[in-house]
Amino acid sequence: MPVDTAPAGRYKGRPNRGHYSGVRVMSLTMLGLRHRVAGAMKRLPMVRDLLASPTWRRPPLTADQYGQYHGSGHIVITPGFPTAVLDRAISELADHPDMRENLHHGSRVFDGWKVSAAVREIALSTYVLRVLHQLYGRKPRPFQTLNFPIGTEQKVHSDVIHFASDPPTFMCGVWVALEDIDLGNGALVYYPGSHKLPVVTMEDVAPGPGPEHYPLYEKHIEKMVKDLKLEPARAILRKGQALIWASNLLHGGGTHVDKSRTRHSQVTHYFFEGCQYYQPLSSYGGYRHLKIDEWVR
Ligand SMILES: O=C(O)CCC(=O)C(=O)O
Image 1 (spheres, protein in one colour):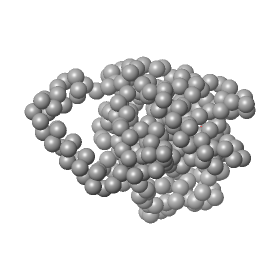
Image 2 (cartoon, rainbow, N blue to C red):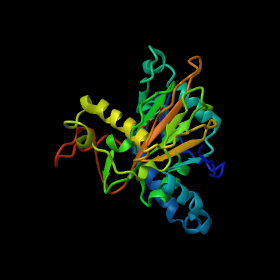
Image 3 (spheres, rainbow, N blue to C red):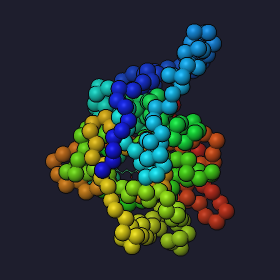
Image 4 (cartoon, rainbow, N blue to C red):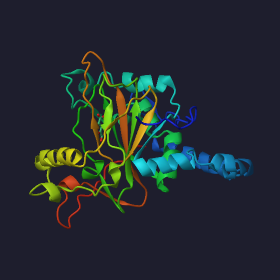
């Protein structure tokens, strides 16, 4: 079970920048003005001193937590998201067809941040961004949100097969429990320490890349977990807690036993500044299928 060692009450969600009833209405002029005002504020001597003060600059995680993350490939944090924000991340997507029609274990809303201010606020939480900056020494760049109504039961995988960076390992997932998660409603399963195993590529397991060969990858990982006798852990989380996993940590959706329950959750995937980003599933030989989606903003 993951250890929750992060301090509570550190939430500094970003203010709603122009989402109203799910529609982005802020103009570019407003955005420019906001940047100019923020820049001017930062130049004020008092604000400059405050930003330079040791308290402000102190990293959010302890050295032990830093070591735990890099040693095991995961950490549970409590960013202190207001309950209202967590609830709105559910309610603002409630009418989305993928949240209500023919629910199945693949059901999810891609990039809900574009229509839900709360989803965006979670993805851009200042506390989470500071934690990630500390863990990776580079500025985090969120590039995708996924919101799930029920457990995915997704087979065990490493995110590197989907999202890779050069230099490697500069990618992670932050999975936020929007309600209490336990063994009954699809708690994530993951394998502590597995991020240190060699990266498995499509070339290792299939005649070539391409989503059509992905089942071969899943089979290979299943066998590898068995052969190496890897010990699973389950992410039992309280509402508002978040599990961060390193890109190569093996993980998947646990069985959603109690079908009468939901498993509302949000994962945000992050890259880090200054890398090349690509999708191994569509890359082959020397060719890299670059990932140039929008950043969450
Ligand atoms: O939420 C889940 O059950 C699985 C999520 C996952 O594996 C991922 O985002 O990579």
